[in-house]
Image (tube, rainbow, N blue to C red; front, side, top):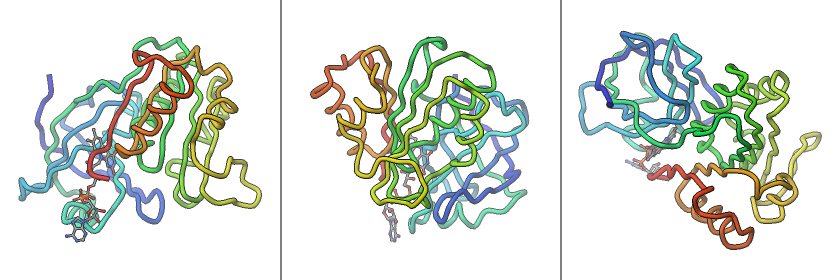
Length: 234
Ligand SMILES: Cc1cc2nc3c(=O)[nH]c(=O)nc-3n(C[C@H](O)[C@H](O)[C@H](O)COP(=O)(O)OP(=O)(O)OC[C@H]3O[C@@H](n4cnc5c(N)ncnc54)[C@H](O)[C@@H]3O)c2cc1C
């Protein structure tokens, strides 16, 4: 059952040139499943409300983190002006973009800021040592657009069942990636056992739709093995 509470900005972390994380301190320990989202209302203006995935894991018990791509909207500007100590209002948890069988094989396909709930799920699997075999195919325009790169590098080192394949629109000297977009060839190449996996797709609606069409159309993945989260608004 979702609850509505006031939270205090504990810390703000710049992730890249246009993405920031906001760590929120709650009156009690956060209670949610990895991959769920919340509604964030900026205090003092009930019109400034957005849904944001929770990018922290339930194992990170001292805060709830959301991570926003900052645009020129009124909400983004007001969020960007927040400082540690400011109050916001949240309603949470919502959503079904969650792991249902922790020990099975899964694959995540994501682009840009669509990585936020996936960071939560991967961090949870690593911290709990779930044994879930995970392949993440993460696409971005360039290396500077990758969000949580250091986090994912660290997770890959400590958890042997996590493979990350980067896909970029442009080459980057010394950086291992596929150049182009995620397509059926990239999925076959990076996830040869794709028919044994449950797929989780997250990003802007157009990207999610394109990925779903590739999986169910070209690759024959059945609909019940595809879970989606659409970031309406991009
Ligand atoms: C379940 C769910 C989870 C989500 N999780 C996340 C998440 O983890 N992180 C995240 O970043 N987003 C997430 N989103 C998307 C988020 O809710 C917003 O829709 C999105 O971030 C865009 O919000 P915005 O206020 O920045 O831009 P919007 O107000 O939606 O505007 C869209 C575009 O119009 C432009 N624009 C708007 N107003 C102006 C203006 N006055 N002048 C000039 N240009 C303008 C903006 O630059 C922007 O590019 C999620 C959405 C859903 C449904």
